[in-house]
Length: 139
Image (cartoon, rainbow, N blue to C red):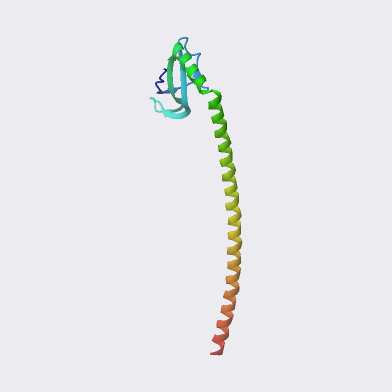
């Protein structure tokens, strides 16, 4: 069984490194993951962008075994599970969207209620002021 030994590597190549590199070496295949662009400070104090990634080196025989293992993962049963997962994710997205719409509608209702309460309060405030003025004038 192939065991991938990952190490963190930085590369200065212009283009983003390939996930699977079969061209750099006639005897080694490089598998990469977590490829990202990072800013580093060089020895001369200047900053430069480099590619940083985790990389595993496999011999051609190890790579052939690795490909066979990956192919096993792509069986119809696994693909069916992945499809079910996609369906569930889509259903969850629909649920979240529905909840967001309900919350928006509830927010509109709450704003209408608050506006009504504010109007009622302003009306009552005027009534209270009128009565206070009326009683104050009578004293």
